[in-house]
Length: 347
Ligand SMILES: NC(=O)c1ccc[n+]([C@@H]2O[C@H](COP(=O)([O-])OP(=O)(O)OC[C@H]3O[C@@H](n4cnc5c(N)ncnc54)[C@H](O)[C@@H]3O)[C@@H](O)[C@H]2O)c1
Image (cartoon, rainbow, N blue to C red):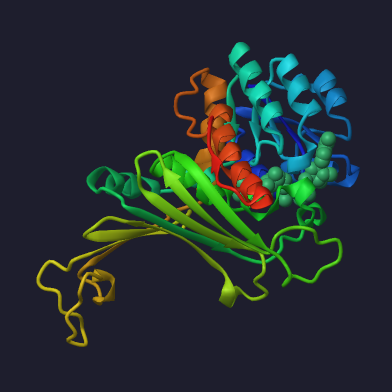
């Protein structure tokens, strides 16, 4: 049985733990590490297995894991990855992989050198709505991508400090940037405007809202709005619209995928209006809906664990070197926001 450990027993660590306890047919949950001892101990209690640590090196010495889930905040990457690689431990790491592109490039190179298996927490790539989305991309030429992700300020204290979290684009909306890359195309150029002044909160030092214009390598354009200014769910939003000349589709990460096209029989909606160019106004015959089934985090985590057990990493949809590109994409938006200039994206 391969041994699995975890570093960082907070919010997302708990999400992974809920999955990992279902995989004890192929792994042993051997150790949990957090700077806060009670957190590590509570994970052992939940798992009914493993030993609690506050020092990951001591855990590595004693447990000697085959794989580790690294679930620490964006500003805590560095020594953990170097030590994990030095010891030849395969690793799953949460997004964003860091806030330092040079560091992450170095990690990607070292991972390659050591032929380690890696995966990153872009579970949206494993959603059941991904397959129909790929079909849509293959069958249609997309002209415009419009996306939004608006929510409130996440509760973890480090999040409000852009230096530690990376801000909304890098820490949260990276899921949308990543799935656009995965389903559609790579970005070539970004231009981002940010604004502040609505969120009133102690120790808050990041952008409330931003808008990014994107030019993709295939020539299509995109616009992505994001914000953490919302105080009520009524103001929340999350969707990506991919528009072709004769139809459009709306992808909601790990939720749904809807294709709006000309109704087959005619173009008359229920009220009797002629629907010009917007099949979505018609009641149903021009709309096809796919709903997410199950928790995409389960196949995401299971794929990594199985890859380590079998030695075959081919089914992992977000290895480290690919996730690095989503970091570069989102950090380019931050750079643009800071300089007021468009930023060319080079991987
Ligand atoms: N994939 C997703 O959908 C998703 C969702 C939420 C969070 N995340 C990502 O997960 C990461 C963690 O977020 P979170 O909400 O769980 O944060 P959190 O603050 O709830 O938990 C992080 C934990 O890491 C611990 N930690 C930090 N440095 C450590 C170290 N050197 N050794 C041991 N423990 C250490 C902290 O004590 C804390 O308990 C972030 O990068 C976040 O973006 C991903």
